[in-house]
Image (cartoon, rainbow, N blue to C red):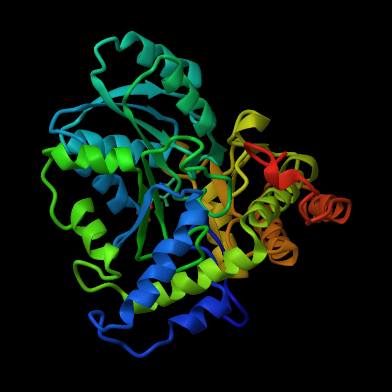
Length: 404
Ligand SMILES: *Cc1c(COP(=O)(O)O)cnc(C)c1O
């Protein structure tokens, strides 16, 4: 098909040309005396992205899922209890992994379309007088439903009852797109991957581990080897890896981190919030459809899950968009299969790219019989973007929490 494929799944995201070019390199000796320069650029460059000065970024040759497993097996003993909530396919898969690895899960079943139920986390933590819960798990951005949770509030709940559990956060589809604060929020392990906000191909598990979590790992007896934090931290200290790292991916990561630093992380967050509001204007005001996220407080700035009307199969919209218009939209997963399609709006993105995606989604919906006004979504997004500034308001960077 002529022209570009429009990639609007919420990961993998569009890789900037600059990053692609940085990845075209001849192989080098990863034990050479100059290799640590690249390793350090990546590891040190990740610290501001995680907003940490004390925790250790770790790069595994995996995807985000590998970092879920690393968090559990490095920090916990076999059979340990974890507290978590399930409200979408990704939070579900982490629960599933906990169970398959033999951990005991206290599960807060939550309607899909809502986020982490902070009051219920608090109730479970305050009932746990003997501190049987060893880790609290939160999915910051549930990519399946387009829902963002308040991680800081979960930390507050833990602190309010002085609960000593570790806090593990899945920030795979939030890091470098929606505010994340390792140090301020007292996060012990942050799990992410290369193919979302970091604008790279899939292939790196990008994670960050607190001093407290590394301390717990010293005595935790769950079996692990390839994903051992201690091996990694020890090798990284001298600028090397315990096994052969992917040179092109590290070169790409260094370039992506440079791009994020040049734009400024707070500007990156603001751009995502601004673009997301345009998409929501298209969905809600233009097409007059609903989002899977049930209240504005849950709206995600990286992915919107658009509910299709009764009698329409969301998969038909996605198939039509792909086959006829060369546009890749995200599918509804598991419980919400067929009920929605997702528009990823994270990474290297601007208004006109998104207008292409909105226009394509509109064409595909019209083709399969969704009763929307032609041009209505595109017009609503245009109106939003024309009447709002993509620039960060002065003083906003210092504000705590999500961008207003
Ligand atoms: C994409 C994603 C994952 C899975 O990451 P992989 O890199 O595919 O292993 C986990 N959690 C969330 C929230 C995600 O969006």
